[in-house]
Amino acid sequence: MVAFFGCNNKFPLRYLVLKRGKMETKSGKWMGGSLLVISVIVLAAFNVKRLEQQTVSLEDAIAAGQIKMQANSLGTYSDESVLLKIQNNTPSILKVKVKAGTMFAPGDDGEQTLITIDDQFIVLQPKSANQLNLKAYCTEASDRCPSDQGAFTLATNKNAELSKLVAFVRGKSISAQYYQDAIWAVTDAHPISNIQATTAAEKEMRKYIATITNKPDTWYTTPQSRVVDANRNIQQETVVVKGMITFTCDKGSVVHQELVKKNGDIMYKSDKTNTIQSGKVDFSFTVKVRGWEKGEYAVRVMAGTKELTSYPFAI
Figure 1: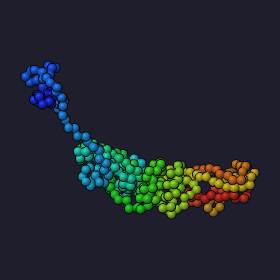
Figure 2: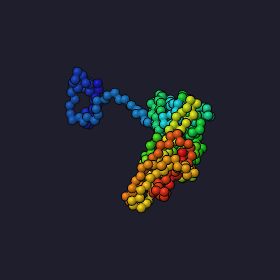
Figure 3: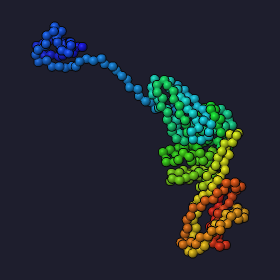
Figure 4: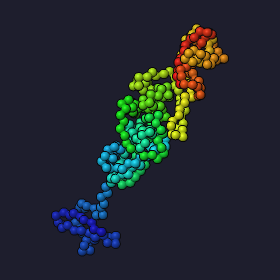
C-alpha cells in the first residue's frame, strides 16, 4: 500500500511503502527532515449515487410513460373498492399520488363509476411493481355494484358540485364512513338526512352539501341499512330517525309524545308522561322505523290535548 508525502525545499518528493506493518522509503531507508504530511493513505474510492424519491401524480406518470397502471374492482362500491397495480418503468424511486377526485370508470356502463375523496400514495422501487387497495366511492347509486375483478379505466369528473365537495373536505377531520352518503346526496339527490355528522367538521360538511344542492339541512338524521342483492343492485332502508327536539311550556306541564302521519292520523301515542321542571326543554329523540312505509311523518309534543311543538320528518 502506498502513502504520499509532501516535503520542504530540502527534500524531494518521496513515496513510502507499507511493508509488514513498517513504513519505509522505496530504497528501504527512513526519510528524515521536517516533512509535512499533506495527504493520507489512498484507499479505493467508490462513488455511490443515492437514489432520490420522486413524487408524481398518477395521471402525469402515465402520460410520461413512467408507469403502467392496472385497476380492478374489489367487488364493492365503497371504501377499499379498487385494486391498483402499478409497474415502475424508471430507474428512480417513484411516490405516485392518486389525487382526491380521481375517477375510475368500469367497462360495463351499467356498473358504478367510483371516485376518490382523499389523496392516496403508493411507493414504487426502481423497475419494480407494487399494488394498493384504493379507497373510492360510488357516484351512481342506481347502477349496479362493480363486478369483482372487473377492469377500471381513469375517467374525468364532470360534476361541478362533486368537485366542490372533494375540495371542501380536504384537510378536515371527517370520518370516511360518512363519505358515501355525502357523495350520493350530491350525485343522486339522496336526502341530506342520510349524512350522519358527529364532529363540528362533519356538521359543517353536511350544511355545505345542503347549500350546494339547494336542500334543507334537516333537524334529524336517517341512518341507512344497505345490502347488495343477487343482481348487484344496492338495496337500502331507513332504520332509525333521530335528532334533537326543543320546546317551551309552563313549568309543571305534563307532556307526552305522539307520532303522526302527514294527514294527522296518530300512529303512536306514548303512555309515558313527563312533568316539566323548567320552561325550556331540549331532548334527544329516537324512533326505529324499519319496515315503515316511505312517506312524511311528524313527532308531536303534547300537553294534554294542546300541541306544544311538531317536528316533521320523512323516510
